[in-house]
Length: 352
Image (cartoon, rainbow, N blue to C red):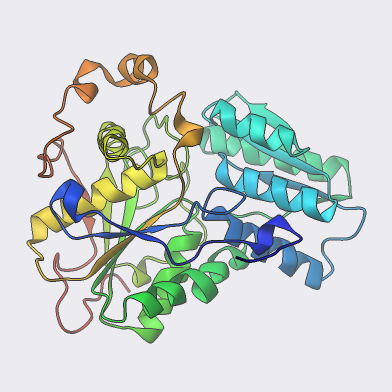
């Protein structure tokens, strides 16, 4: 049992859930929510803060500011409290209430943006505009900018991907959710350099524009972007799997019926992974998916029936959640091809 003096010093790195008994297909789910921040974002937050301290950007009197839909905001709130920095998180109305309360409990100031920037990327554009105004008004403000900061992906290049490689030396397919694409790019770059046969599948949510899709309403925070992620380099990604939010909800609730309460980002990744595995008939392959978060912060959204019915209708909750086989995917486009659908002995290259 470790003994720590700062909360960011603890993170369970080697816990996986075998989903075979729940979905009828082999998939190992790497759980990233067992730390004091409750999500994979602890790694990026730690790397970005410590890098800014090393290069002198962060000073003792600095005020941290960042735009976040939730999980990074909690991680930065925790680190800021530990290190003594004031922190302002700029979020929007889709951020779960529990998440906002957690940030405030940790001593952070939370600003909720509600107005869209009509020509600058919707709510995200409005959040970024507010962050820029804070920095312009007070020279002590330091914006880490998770969307452009290379330390975001380097955290996963140095920690997440090597941990997966150690545990699964014969890994064939890796599924990673795409938000800022820090986790995706760190893992994809690592496996491109170290394990060229690993097939990397990005999982994104419908309504996100990251992989060229049309913008649309997205109500579950975590994955997806309303502007193209600056960190994204598609040449490192073999395919992109697109998941409807209704399927995210079904997957989350199905996992919960078996005792595993995961967050919306995890539901999206698992849904996309299961659909990819079902289409490709890849029995015998070793497949891993990254679960970014746990589900307590989604109790008033994904797991709240009135919220779900009001946004997605009754059909979302009428599927047979006790079935031992993965249900037929929802109609409509589900994936964006960068290469062949099934991995082979050599690496399948996508766009260059």
